[in-house]
Length: 129
Image (cartoon, rainbow, N blue to C red; front, side, top):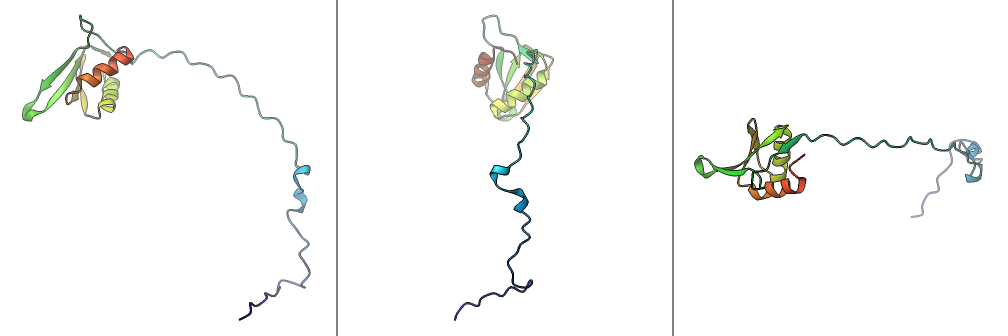
């Protein structure tokens, strides 16, 4: 079966002459754009004071201990915390992938035996954050 040729039923059959894009022209007639605005130089922010600080023990280590709980559970306690203990607990929970809480005015607790990972993290940060 042969394909039917479509008929132009829009008018008199003459080619379209009203081209809405004709006024735009080609790339040679493109308008010249103004130069981009100059951004002001970035100002370096002053160093923010540390939110929290952890004191080291007399022998140079961190005050980390493991506490056994009922049911065979354990928790790592970090003592000697100064400043915003909530910010420290939030960072340690993210680091260890475990729960944790502020347990005293200068102590935080993280679930599980996390002593080695917390000690390595504190060594890397110098006990401040």
